[in-house]
Length: 81
Image 1 (cartoon, rainbow, N blue to C red):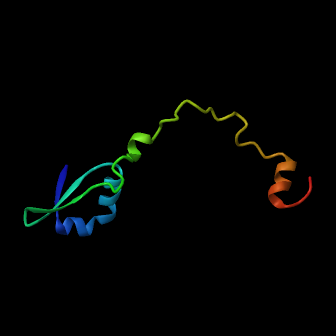
Image 2 (image 1 turned 90 degrees about the vertical axis):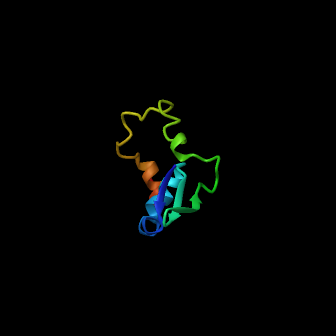
Image 3 (image 1 turned 60 degrees about the horizontal axis):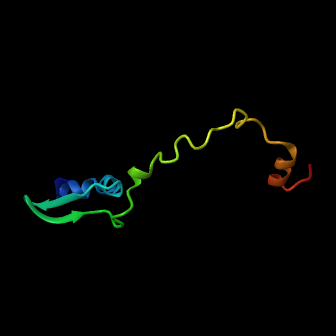
């Protein structure tokens, strides 16, 4: 758990919120005295732990970037194939 001063918290709030969202807890101190603690709102959700959990379950097919068939394009464009 890291401790930062009020000025650092005001200057880097967006970055601090990102760190907290990833599960870090941060103490904010005023003149060296702890006054607040930033913690994730939903304690059970840890985005870092969920990243990559499906790795290896899906393989991108070789033709993934090939042009779509005409009948599929027609559906997207509202026309007829």
